Amino acid sequence: MDNNIITITDLSKSFDGTLVLKDINLNIRKGSVTTIIGPSGSGKSTLLRCINQLEEVSSGGVFFQDTNITESNVNLSKIRSKIAMVFQSFNLFNNLSVLENCTIGPIKVLNLSKEQSNERAQQFLEKVGMLPFINRKVTTLSGGQKQRVAIARALCMDPEVILFDEPTSSLDPEMVQEVLDVMRNVISEDISFIVVTHEMDFAFDVSDRVIFMDNGEIVEDGEPSYIFHNSKNQRLNKFINRV
Amino acid sequence: MFTQMILSSIPDDFIGGITHIFENNYELYLEGIKYTLIISLLGTSLGLLLSLLITIFRIQEIEKRDSLFTRFLKRLSIFVSSSYVEFFRGTPMMVQAAIFYYGLATLGFRIPILIAGILIVTLNTAAYLTEVLRSGINGIDKGQIEGAKSIGLPKSKMYRYIIFPQVLKNMFPAIGNELVVNIKDTAVLSVIGVSELFYMGKSVAGTYYRYTESFVLVALIYLILVLMTTRLLTLFVRLLNGNDKYSFPSSQSVPVEVNHG
Ligand SMILES: Nc1ncnc2c1ncn2[C@@H]1O[C@H](COP(=O)(O)OP(=O)(O)OP(=O)(O)O)[C@@H](O)[C@H]1O
Ligand SMILES: [Mg+2]
Image (tube, rainbow over all chains, first blue to last red; front, side):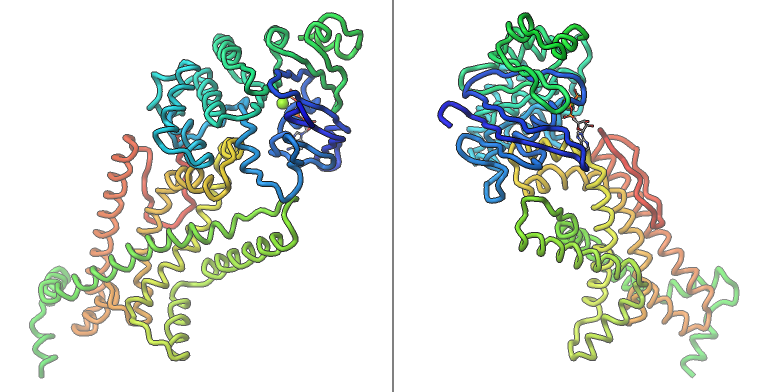
């Protein structure tokens, strides 16, 4: 599976008998930025969550490099440490400080020393502009600040992939931009980004590839200019005109 | 002759009687207080530790990717731990103490009464706190668990570093409440002859044939112990949190969710 970091084959997922992902096939190229757009309930989050096995698939395969991570003999903890995730609701650890949120993974999962972990955490907290808040309890931060810490926490795992599930959707409007700017700032060739978002300008600017989902299916898939300007697909155009 | 002397020296009035009983027996009461406090403090602390262990068995979840053998082990641990909780929550501590102590004696095991008392309180506390812990864990935002999974924290470390610290902080009032309940409930251990406060009260009452005075005195001592404990706990939590949101009801009730976000 040469250049692909994630490969999804014939993936289906149902909740209580309702099919919400229908036979999805998808390759994610190493180092690329992929955004997933689509109406509410189309299965974007579910697809993303299958990629780090926060949801179990009903059938089909999810490969990380060459490993089918849906099989029961894989070390999920190890796989997940390489596929970090940033959530809509931040999901920072409420009992830990900003710094500790970023070091717990490196120390307890990657087995780095405390010094190394602190150094790494400071480096990434600086990158997201949160270095001055290093000793704060995360519960005292604003939404935008929380999300920046969550991005630093993900980066500290030195992951191959970072999944973003609507990272700006629960933020006050004035904080959306600061988080999008941080995201632009951390995009690099070393990490593959898969971003579910409703921010179309952002998707257009940063993506190598945009995927449009509707009703549990991938309906359109292509470069941003194709998706936003050239596609003739009616469902896609209806969706884009609505947002 | 001797009994006659004891009985004639005690004043007839209520207050005088209490004062006299206390002045002449305070060493017994102190001894009783000592055992009551040792048993309830140790029983509560050990019970808390044991409840953490039982909770780990109690909260196993069967996942699709589990092998048949793993599924079997998980089912078994859920069954054993919930049976434990139901037995200890469903029977009176006094009966448990009797079964435990006399039962072991019949089987030929002689354990010191004090140890038996601590064990009974521990086992009871563990059952109660397991329920509290479990509902505390259920009350934790699912996002905390997903956050931990997303960085690859294995379950054991997730519980140790993320979930338990938050739940323990939230359930501190329930733990304190359980300590207060235990201070009072050690009284039932007199059934197996543990010389805690109530046992001492009974024996003093028997000496003077002044039951009301003796037991009122015992009640006052319990009340002082409980009031001091609740004040100390409240103070402790204030130091810990810098606020006064917690309070400690002195009866066994469902712990109030105290969440600092
Ligand atoms: N845990 C669950 N149990 C049952 N149904 C679920 C669950 N999670 C998602 N669904 C259903 O699956 C479908 C897809 O949901 P999903 O959250 O993936 O959509 P989405 O595209 O992310 O939508 P949104 O833009 O609103 O976040 C929806 O119909 C939703 O109701
Ligand atoms: Mg979603």
